[in-house]
Length: 278
Ligand code: DGY
Image (cartoon, rainbow, N blue to C red; front, top):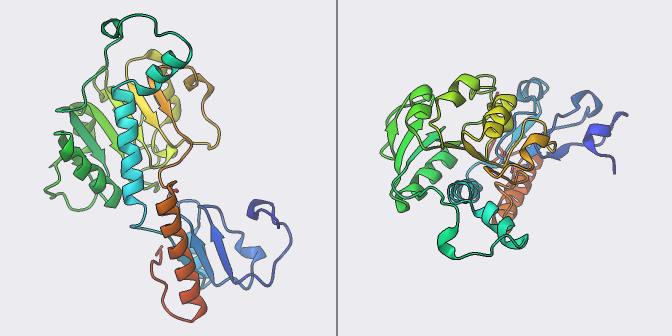
């Protein structure tokens, strides 16, 4: 078996391909009929080129919303309550005094959560926020009205939130959307959580803010995965996870079923369940 990125010779028999958000070498796959992406985000698949070649592209929307929203909350809680830092403190034998001598964290309950991108996953995060009595603000490109929170433009979202959680897909419009200027709008002690795509944030600017200690972050995604900026590795104000938003047993099974159902539908000459359009 050859990894897709290492394919150099034409492969005339492949009609269906399962990818995990990877570039598809269309020139080497002349018989290809369907690309089934294992994941909702397909920013590395050239959908326009596939469709121009008559190749159907599918993804797995809907089945990973809860898992990803849960992880966003895990990161929010971990950063605000300094969970990973506390874990390291205990493991390394640093805990020697009374509970009342510990460093203080920030309360989550009652704080303001800004959701950048109120789609399926962002909405699942907003619903969870109700349980924590959070004030929810949101930005989204299409359709301003939602009863899940108060609409703000992106700058106001960063200015008014204690925590900003990113849930917008990576597109040419959102690439670098969270730049140095917007990061600087986050209040001191604020927190950025990203379970979407690393490229949405200017990673160098984020690293600079985090190294300064002015803000904290919970990061599940990075601009050049699996590379993680070295400067982040020892910072107490950052919680890092290896792109595991959808990585639960239940969600992975549901994604797999959807991938297979899409492939079978195309094989039968039927419309796929969850096609992606350019
Ligand atoms: C997705 O679905 O796009 C995730 O990032 C992969 O788990």
